[in-house]
Length: 302
Image (cartoon, rainbow, N blue to C red; front, side):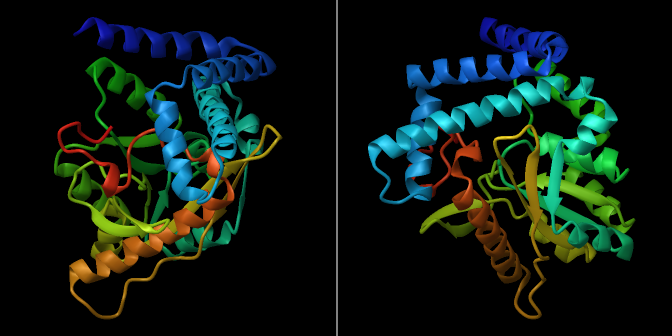
């Protein structure tokens, strides 16, 4: 393990062991202080965040983009402070920490027994939304996690999410799709963060007027299993409570090849994501390149 990998692992370990013991107001202030310091340094992640916001808010002035990136970093650090503390939250704190609209799309889908795929972008705190599902709805679900380096850091994330009641599968390897399909055919729930393709074999979509690539998995799972495909968007307000919306189901087209159906459904998913991101751009934590015009194969998908 390299020195950088050991440092990253130790840093996250410190977060989970120390931040979760802090009183909530202290953790909130700490997150904001770290966010503002990172924003002032204007590192690669902050600059990329601003470039992404420039597409989401076309015509925004440099001053407006700077305001958005500062708010975006505060939102991003709120996500981390909450995530470090989630294992120490009481069940009541989890239940009252998230208020979703149009939840009937999810509850009715689960009651039908056909299985449900929830697809989310990197908005607000998807881990909190997941913990709310396992706690408030008492519904377990399966998800996938990107393989991180070092392996010990990936193991920390898996243990953290499993501790919140999630079944976590590695993103790499072909077995994940089959396991997800089995869970759905059994009437289960699958939750996938799906606004950034990690495989370089995703589906091209129009996203805020430019081409991007998003994972095909949610649409393919719905086609293969008959499961309901539901987009979900999340956001923060000025309260300690996260908000969210479950969007209407994306139907499988009646005609077309599998590839054509997947393209139509993934575009519909991108459109739903775009509505939530446009309404709450500062809560979209996309500090990596996303649009095809920005991707440089020589540099990789950073």
